[in-house]
Image 1 (cartoon, rainbow, N blue to C red):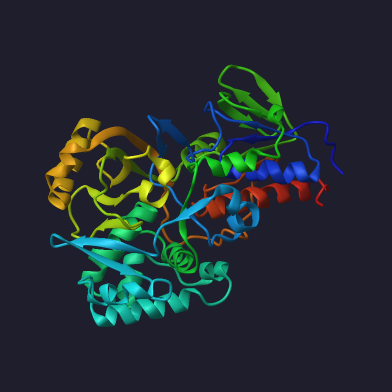
Image 2: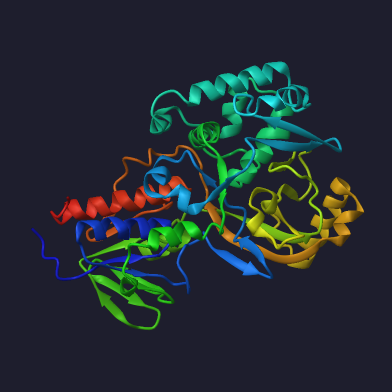
Length: 420
């Protein structure tokens, strides 16, 4: 049995790092978490501004995620669900589509929406049945290809690909060209079919805050950016050296690649999220609105305060708009373009909307090119004494962040003969 007189050093206090720390804590293994930012949560951060609740980018919790369901207390999060469906804007009109199993009153509007053929609807129903067969992780054993190629192989029409799948996948995976893994697409399609898409009543930061509840505060250091790592410890940007028995990298993909010394770091995708305040919402139902026209900068729009009234002060509403790509444009140009496009959607009332804040998330998600490996069986060790968890080399998302954090901790415990 190896000597445990030093901490396991976890670099990063996002979901993966916190889940890893929780598992080590429950096993009685000493650890320390080093976070470069001044607060925990990774990308799951929430700001309060003039009575509004602003998540850093468009973020939601899919309640069907197995690891989230196992670890999180959904009642304590006070989850507020979106309606099971979406509103598609195309040809100047809005069309509501929904899961007829859970939203039967929207059956007619779903059938009448001009987003695809009757055959497309039958193919979508077959796809939903197919992806729900067996254990969710079995999807990662299926043949993998770009999602566009997968959809064409299933004979989906160009119309439904452009009007539904492209904006949907752009919102979920920030991939409007549908180049990402068909395994990831099928997994996401299953999760959407099996559970709700929801917002915690107090913002997405409530999720990492809940993971923090059992962790001793003296084992988490914020504003502690790591400059380099080695099997026996880390060196901070300040020059401080910290020794440990193992190092676990739980940072976002590009940072993990830097610390691991990767010669070809994986790519990532960004998003721009704008928040507006309005006296009246453009719609009064808790739906995601998707741009089904295949052009323009706006990919999607939501009204979080319709889903969770706590997100806005009384008498006002919060509007969230997501732009995928266009990272080179400055904030003023982005806001001007978004307002112009939304004026075409909703009319001159958009002039009355008050801009609250624009968030730019440079590394919102990693590239998810095929083939994507089974995230439940990968090894976390990249060299003796150094491990990785989170999205690096794996599937991004809340499910896989927490699962990889726990699994990496369990691998460390086995390697040190302390697993229990």
